[in-house]
Length: 505
Ligand code: AHR
Image 1: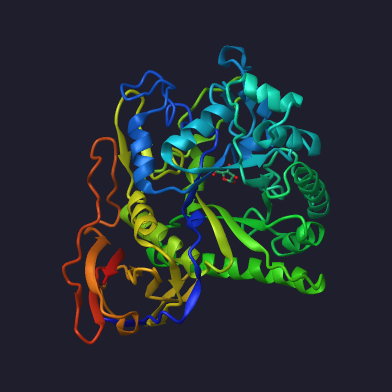
Image 2: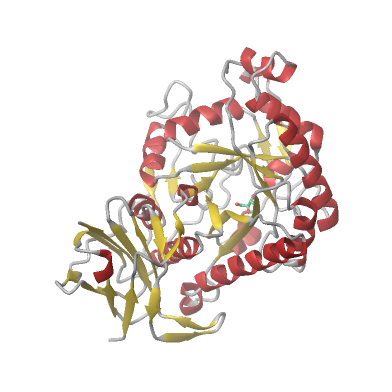
């Protein structure tokens, strides 16, 4: 059996853990909002039409922030359509997803739902078909207590107190030709800078996110970041990035190593941002908002689900409803490990998305809500990771992958709460057929005991939770774990597995 060794030291800290790393994303797309979190006729629906069973699951998931309302959707969105009396709201064509937007849910409703799930709201402004004026109108409506028209409209619509939204995305994926109103880096950089400056004239303490490349494979990746940041470096706090991964041609070994691609992506964006920092002689270090990440079988959307017929504009169609397997969950767990390892630069992240649409939570109209496999690594990491992220010193054999070259068989990260001394270790075994023994040297963390272990694995790596079998997959305690008096923890990781270990004093 191969072996790996992880050494942890409380002096070697990556960064304090920003809880916004456990954010998510809700877009007006498919059945995420309508027939997802909002279903007035559902037996568990509350007075506002929100499903209580979904609220309970989102709370259990531990989501800290939610990016809203898109995504591609936001680039054609008129925020005014979603406020005021619901029966007077217009129905609009959503060209991003070829659907009919009823606007039953808008800013007020979504802010209320965010409160119910205990999450902070993060908004995106439309810089596709709109610009500076509409962005500051929305900001006035959302954040400003004053006798001015938009503030008073908010009050008349039932919200005396401003929503006080701190974090704002300046558009979405503005480099992508699929995006309404996509732009060159130069044009977007100028627009984002002007929008940011204007927004700060209303509310100086905002945290603003400029769009980075839509993904690492965009032809302009790197130069886009440089140009956009040359225009916006002093105006924004974050540059965004997005990444989705999927199993290609059954190549499990490559898929299980895709977090190495996320590692490289983050490091390249940091380099591009630091290049601008150096030529501007700036003291400021640009943070990264990884505000869309997940496993997404995007080929299935393009080949099967995509709606294009000129007369077909359904309300809340079934789009991007991927059913996630054990291997997908192991990859998601590994992507979270990658985000944590880069906690010094990635200070905000959003699992895309939350309900029904490439989501950890699925629902049926009038029926059940259940946890996908990917729910577990997210929820357990969000609950157990506390305090500071520790630098993982990992000695581990490599294996060959077609997509990413040689990749470590095991990936890992740890956190430690300096106040309580409690620690948590997160590990994946990427081997498709071999268990691995990992020794974790925690001696320097002080006297600890194992409080919890959770391993997600299955004899069938393609097992999934479905409407018919909602509890087929769940993590189980890992009884192989033992912590000896010399401070060395030993644990066996099954093939294709994700594991969390909680240690307390
Ligand atoms: O999350 C689905 C879509 O992926 C988003 O709308 C878009 O921003 C990205 O391309």
